[in-house]
Image: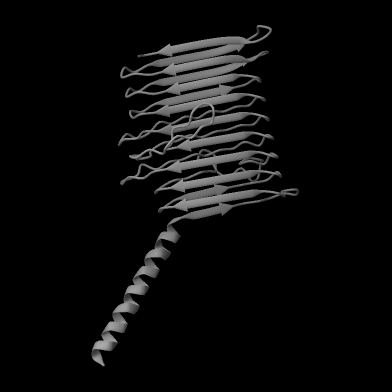
Length: 271
């Protein structure tokens, strides 16, 4: 009798331990959605979270918006931005119509430096795809995920205009942390591709105040590159910037295009 009792007790204890382990992991992930105003219909959120201490904040607003989020690993985060908090009361964190966001974050090593995203938007018909822990080509092809991805990336977007396409990725594929980004797009009909990879701190600051710009900005290699770009003017600019290699590169551009038909800038730094 005593043996049967102890065996039953041990099994029950094991079940409870597994149950509380699962509960604790579920508790570590958080999801907040604040949907206000009228006409906030047809909002679709698809979310997958694997790991612990992941968090998704949202404000929503607008109609016809679709957001797909896939977070794997620990300490991931999406938004609203920590810089100003929720935009629910003033029209942020989407709030526009027919926007499409596809966000993937991966960290498969311990300790994980965490991925972030953060966003704002409020314009209409913007298409944003961003991948952290993945290599994405400028054609939108997502290559094999990193085998050794320690996270530690950051973005913060901010798109107030409409009909913009933004595609980006940040990855290390080693124990390196931090890449940053920032962005800011206040015009319309811009096509932007930004990619950062390999370790050592890198940063990009892109601000677009006008429309019809076509931008490719890539930072790669083992050095601490930096780039600050501001585009404005009556016409758009085609910008191709590549910073690469093991020697730190720095680039700053403040472009106001007044040339009918648009302007063109192509820069390659490092080897």
